[in-house]
Image 1 (tube, helix red, strand yellow):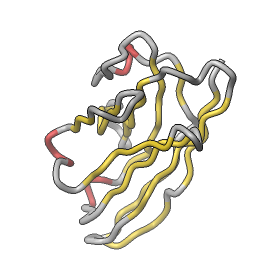
Image 2 (cartoon, helix red, strand yellow; image 1 turned 90 degrees about the horizontal axis):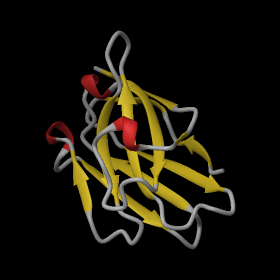
Image 3 (cartoon, rainbow, N blue to C red; image 1 turned 120 degrees about the horizontal axis):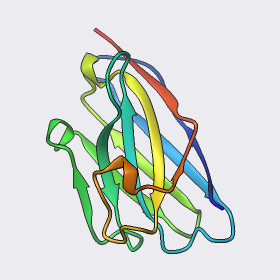
Length: 125
């Protein structure tokens, strides 16, 4: 079992920045690719960013490219999502997720085995 806990969400003005963190625990954490997803009110959960276990490959949905950076520190069992130039349509609950079924990472939520509880990001215009 892997437990994931997100933090770092909050209220920010448009154009501002936030860094989300996802702390993982559990003895089987090693080897997981990680992803960040988000869900806005009334919308389906969507992929935001993904990263392989080594951190050698990262990938993003088009709407956040150039504004979002995913990274990880395996020594700290933590994955980060740095977001800049935030816009009102970035408002959502952000979730981190872990997968072993797709070592290269995936944009598909059904490929992920474990999920955090989410952290709210609200961007005011």
